[in-house]
Length: 59
Image (tube, rainbow, N blue to C red; front, side, top):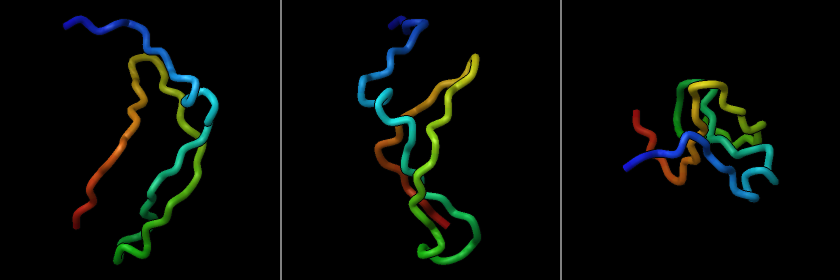
C-alpha cells in the first residue's frame, strides 16, 4: 500500500484552529487532570498531527 506524500485536512479541521486536551500539570488523583482548550499545533517538516479518538491513562 502506497501512502500519498500530501495530507488533506477536512473542512472540519480547518474550521477549528483549537483542540481540547486532557492535561496533567501535577502528580495526583484523577481530579488533578483538566480539560483545556489549546491552539492546535501545526506540524513542521517531517512531522504529522494525529487525531486521537480515545486513549487510556494508567499509573
